[in-house]
Length: 219
Image 1 (spheres, one colour):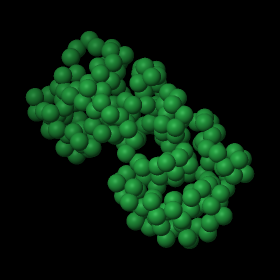
Image 2 (spheres, one colour):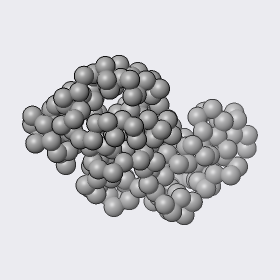
Image 3 (cartoon, rainbow, N blue to C red):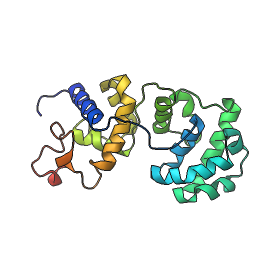
Image 4 (cartoon, rainbow, N blue to C red):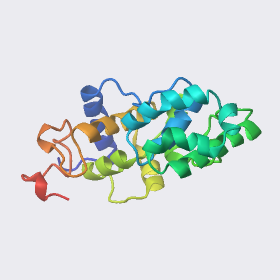
């Protein structure tokens, strides 16, 4: 599709993904803001499915930020070993809980600026919390988002912060959070990293990557 503006491309992508994935939800299981914060930290370089297997026992043993703040890091490690990078993650989670208790009365803050002061919390996690918990416009730039928006033709960069800014300028704020959740679903089901299934993609008519007759030669 020629002569299409980035804003028009964004609108087309939002509509196509909304039709394909009407239920745009985070696949991490949680019951309160702090649990989502912990689960998101555990999900780094780990599948959401694996995290969801680990967190029930973890949260039963450590029900609140206060409990994590008082925990020995080694005790947290024992519960999360299967998530990978568990030593770093356990250290971050305990320190993050301590910071929440010391600086925010044990409550998860509602802004990206405050969230990113917490140990192990970057803009991706902060955007997820702001969007899913506090229902504010958010752009979660994960590997699926970077890959798919690049293939669509929005950019040719890898810098997550720059991509976040670009998408914030193009997306309807009321759609941005769900759009990012749908990118994750689409990345897992269709637009896979190694072998995208362009023939069955809901965005193939306007995707730059899918445009060649033989998509295996693209990119």
